[in-house]
Length: 190
Image (tube, rainbow, N blue to C red):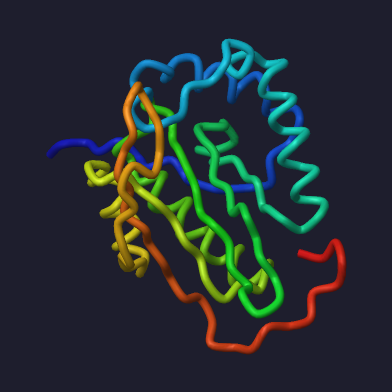
């Protein structure tokens, strides 16, 4: 009988200033491995001070109701980020889903579980009607996760994203969350 490694629980929460060192460490560690998927960033981005600045900006967007910036946790350890950004209210009630998980935690189901949790936040807490996402054409792992959670494709944008020295084509994804009419959002509400 083979013993199985227990699956660590996955959770998400709003990002905090104290997450800067952990995120900087993960991003610096995976910088080369993820160069194909992420835009080029200045050296400062990979430092705790750089991440503190990014977090400050994300939290300012959160305070204005324009984003829900989160971290992904395994037990209580930060292992990545998940964000609902570019939130539009009024007749749209939609946002854009983005995420990444440290290479040390890939293949363990954390990304899929984090996406499921973010869908609940989008529908229940943010009252969004729709989420969108983009993946590069050859990011089959991310496409499988989106498909598993009910996202469907709605087009390809050619030369849409510049990463690792080249323009990349991206697949556009969408998922409808609710069938309700939009509630009136008060300024600053989420």
